Length: 133
Image (cartoon, rainbow, N blue to C red; front, side):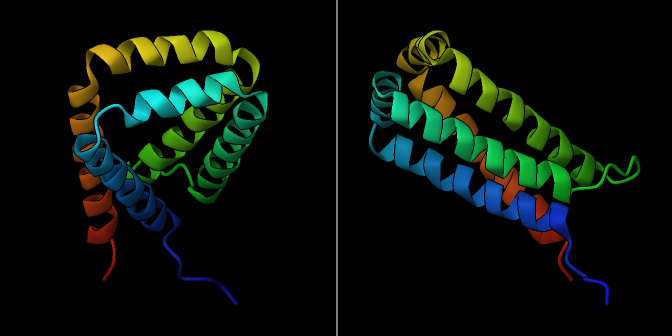
């Protein structure tokens, strides 16, 4: 029995909704992302858990989404899954350096990152929803 699930559409919808609401939360409470990154940087346990969770989610997205050159959403989601896996390894192995980069950018461009995350999440969610019949 074959499954009729559209993994790229579901991945896009769920990741898009998560990004959309993360952006909304960051705009509602400025400084939240800086606090989260600072807390992760201070805790080896949080570094490991965040890295492993991102590796798990990125791996699932990467493995679930086929590379079909004619399907832009499928290719985008597979690439995002791969980038998430690479970022997760940076978090696990180099959190002290990697987190300082994010703290620097989040401090100076907080509203810009939050707005970009919100718009990108909206676009991903919309792209995923458009695939459902």
